[in-house]
Length: 505
Image (cartoon, rainbow, N blue to C red; front, side, top):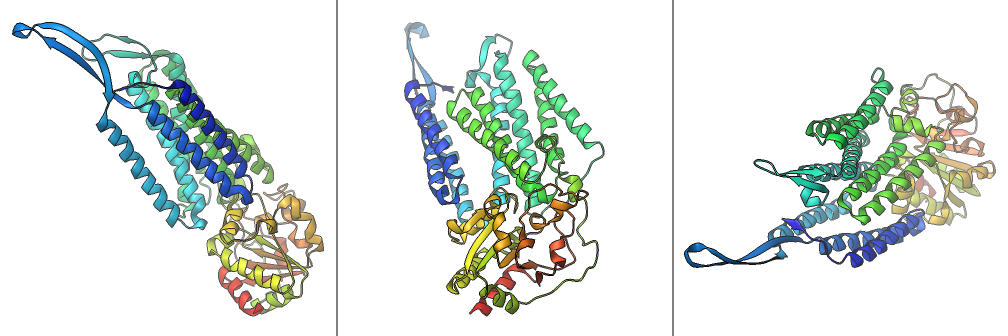
């Protein structure tokens, strides 16, 4: 089967339009208010790219015309012509159909609280696709048009791949393999199939750096010789380093991990775009890779992490290794749903601070209902979002949007932090480390230097927590629990908010 390319001018223009749609999609996704429009642009761009690729790279079959003379002798041979390979086309359309059905069913059934692990799963598929394309290109370079020449040999001709394509193929396969295995570990941790606590290997940084160096050497060896063993060995090492990079990372640092894997998947797609000489893949991969890298950098700053340590892996391990129990018993005040309802009814302004506990309890809908009840009583309600609250970038924004919380009531940390001092009630639901003032004062704390929400400055802090026995993922106790202006509401987050809503009625 051969691939013939037609309509290069049309393809270039269509891919340009698709690229513009992808840029508009990223622009739209930068704000919850425009996220739906951004999604539509992304869907349109991807549809244009897929259709253009199918039209300009139709699977073709070569057909020859042979005229036979007496006794089977060849009198004349007609010119070769091509026709569409119907069987191959049906196979491609069937694969697209299967993928579409799986995607539609998954999107309709998945709970918004499970979005982080879904994103990790999708990243793994992008990485695996890059690996499979690289393997296919290595096994059949003639079909991908990356062979400089074909050397006649006994049995099967040997295609010599051009050196640039070998470098692209090796790097794309390595990045794809790292993305796949790392995303699998992230999925298992986010989905609860694997402990969120870090698994620390001795000399892990040395092992990681040595493995990465070996992969680069093998890429160079493969580009120089085209031997099979460097290609297969670098794939095995890349799969291994993906596991090694993510295993040491604790649950509190998962938002950065998700954005980092997103970046890796983009660069893997871009590398394969060069191999396939597909400008749409190059543009899309570069956009995803660069935006993911920028987002990772922004989130690292929000968590006071080093961007280089993120790439090296295990950057959150020491912080997360502190344990999961409160270190000391101090006096604290316990309140009820009735107490909370009374205090908030009397307030002029309430700032709600959601965290991962809200996501686990799936309390976003009843939380929005509580906000509506408070507004009926004349209370101003705002929502404060920390950049790394939850388990993926924008996790809290997604959940609040699903619950139809008005976009103009949702504020990022830098926009609302100054208002806590003038706020009557800060209502914290399942957010621990991102509200811990130790990040500002305790230099020995593993979260020191991380910007946090200043909830302790509010006149009253209502803090929903399952129990006083546990602490956040960073393994440090929160001084807010024990302050005179804090009332602890110990219960399942959804159940407690439901009781507060009843009390407001």
